[in-house]
Length: 173
Image (cartoon, rainbow, N blue to C red; front, side, top):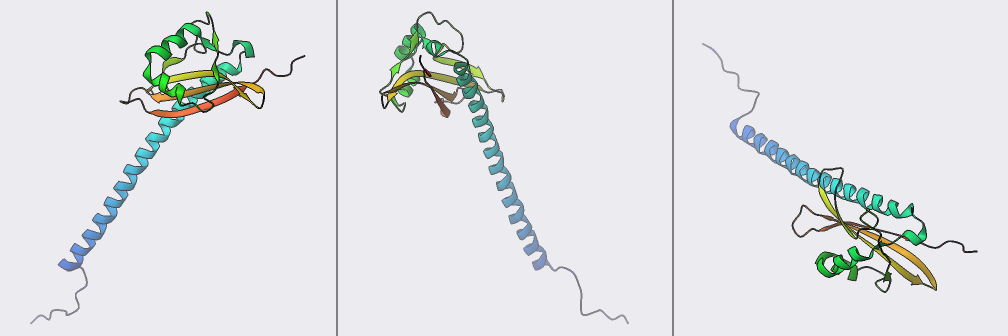
């Protein structure tokens, strides 16, 4: 006659089901964390690419003499009249009391155009809006260049980044 041991080690059905539920909850939590991380990484890549484009646009103005910093007069008039995004963004600029700076016959170079569509390093299309204004603060006139980048491939073209810099005439003799 064989004797059955009374103390059997191992999992019973209840323990097995409990372990499966705990592992399933842990796996679902990890999947949610990965999903959030992917979304965050995608968003920061878009912001980084748009910021690089906006900064490159501002750098174009940094290489110019003060008198050459401005937008093409006819391109600006066209953008203000026919582009609802440009017109509303211009009215919402801080320092809205400034005056637009235009250069007649500036042409179609990137530093002359108020609105451009460019492709970022991420392969996505962005719309750059450039505003050049003379703003007087405490009797000092500064030429403020603001570049706004929008995600052109997304409906509604949401703003991604806005960057500004100011230039002055420097010391005059």
